[in-house]
Amino acid sequence: MARKATTTQEPAPVSDAAEVEPSTVELIKKPQLLDRVVTRTNLKKRDVKPAVEAALAVMREALQDGAELNLPPLGKVRLVKTKELEGGASVMTLKLRTPKHATFANQQTDFADQDT
Image 1 (cartoon, rainbow, N blue to C red):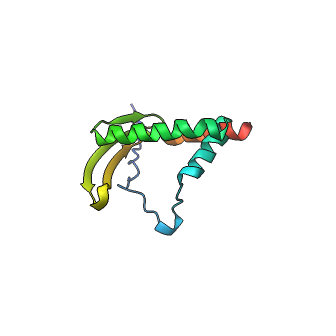
Image 2: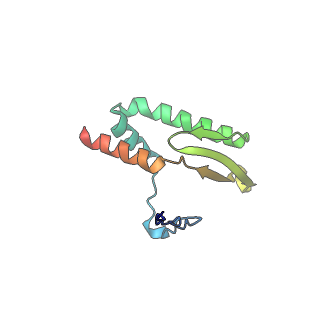
Image 3: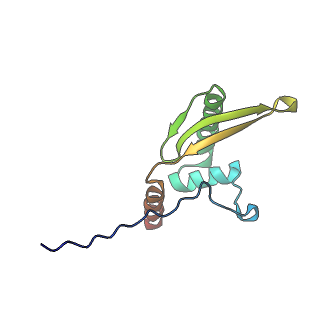
């Protein structure tokens, strides 16, 4: 009997964090976020704004209370550490674990947006 030739492929190396130049990172502020939600949902800004602000406030409160958030398609968010600053402000270090197929889901959403 002849042996079948088998090839093994080694998995591609995965880096711990993507290297991004600080000057190339897009900063999305609340007005831009609201505009994007308006575009994606076809709702009016006056309807979107209170809902987005409430969702952000609920997420902040939950994280401050130590809860983990599981928010598909964003992913699972948990608080790693907190540092209190002067004036009542604080810094929260969060860990975000994205779903396995998050890239695929984003591509599908982008294609759906282009069709309309």
